[in-house]
Length: 143
Image (cartoon, rainbow, N blue to C red; front, side, top):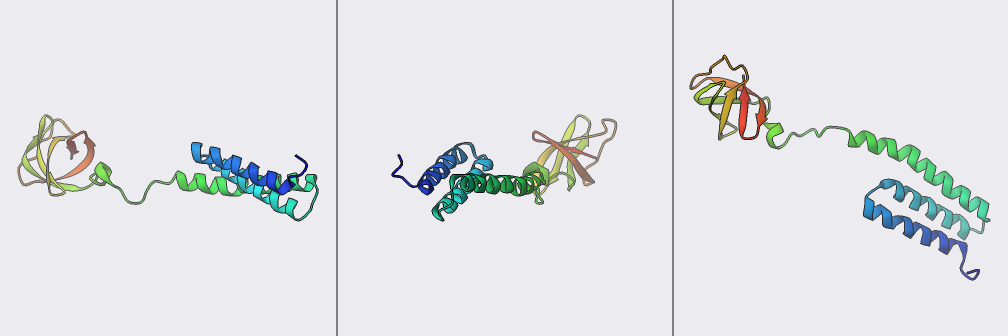
């Protein structure tokens, strides 16, 4: 075991930390792997074990302290482009069959949808424009 240089052990440790990174998709393991590579570089330059461990800790902690908050901030942002039924909310539609609290039909984004009025006491007549406020299954809720 003494025949293998310390930098090789650091690279083995970096590879070992890369495995759970791929399996669990937790970026923290990648940051620790980069810290282990820093330890390997310091070991390759001939520094003692204390400096190697210090390099590993400093690089790992710095990456976690800097990169993790940035990644969390980007992960919590809503996508700017709405897709699917989210893209239909707020759009206007034309009534094809009378729409009231129990149902009806509208033309929305070039397709015929079943619809019902949000206000059950209100009715919309053929040709009238309505706004889609929600999509519940295959039914558009309109006002």
